[in-house]
Length: 169
Image (cartoon, rainbow, N blue to C red; front, side, top):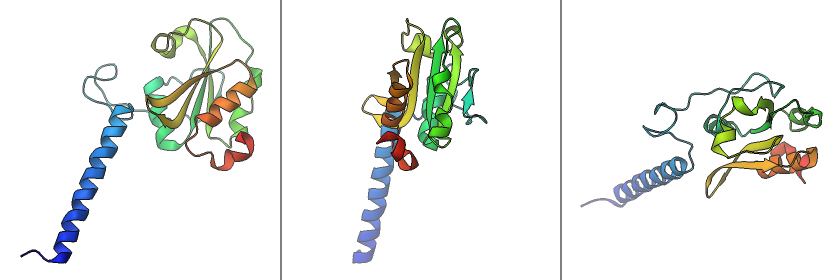
């Protein structure tokens, strides 16, 4: 005969296993984990947060790397994609406005995987990758080419606005 305590422990263990499977299933469906055969050669996503939160050069991170880093670190990436020299001066200070939780980078359209993955045909184009999860997977959205739209899109992409509440609301 099984005691009441043993029954509760078995039920608790079963619930933990069930929740673990649910979480891993959701993470896998949202693109946060990699399967063999996903990515460029079936390799796991291996990326680190850049040292600088503002760069006039590419951070050299693709959509999958940015989505994973955003989710794990509660940060947002702003990708200013261009074909000819473009004035993105309105993005200066955005990283500071969000207390270092936003990574801004400028990237030439032929140097990024966003161009082909998201069928970007018009430049300049602003792509925001946030830590918020959607039903379709990671938050990846386009912003208009102005500061107000970028700030709004960054706020929408944050899972936990936290100390950026004054900027977002």
